[in-house]
Image 1 (cartoon, one colour):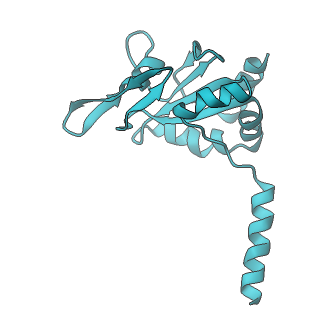
Image 2: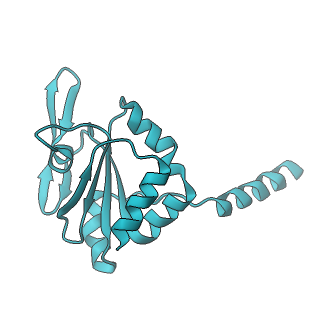
Image 3: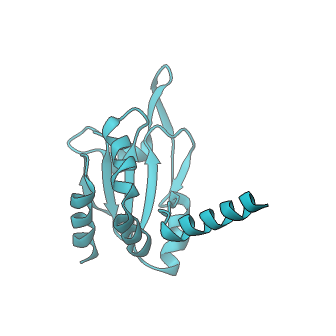
Length: 154
């Protein structure tokens, strides 16, 4: 019984001490925009990209960044190799195989392609009308990502 009480107290302390990043889906964006207009930040990544994984384990674990993303933006964490169809902006996007167990999602290409190529990780920022206002394809450490978020709030 004492162990259970200790676990409950520990979980209560840790859950209130740390804010969780709210990850949205493309399908939810339209209804969310009707409630409150916000810019959308799409983090396009793959499982095999080391810089993508580094951003996930550092930048997106930073409490200031999490609070800013949760309060001022809609954040979408998007695996470029996602195989499910996605309805976004009244259009269906599909996974496009390019070989044996290899491929890329059409929506990742649509949002992440710069200079006719996609290089991971990609940050794509959309305005309230789902129009691309910024694309950035490189690792961003927490300090630089905070600066970017501040500029995007203006």
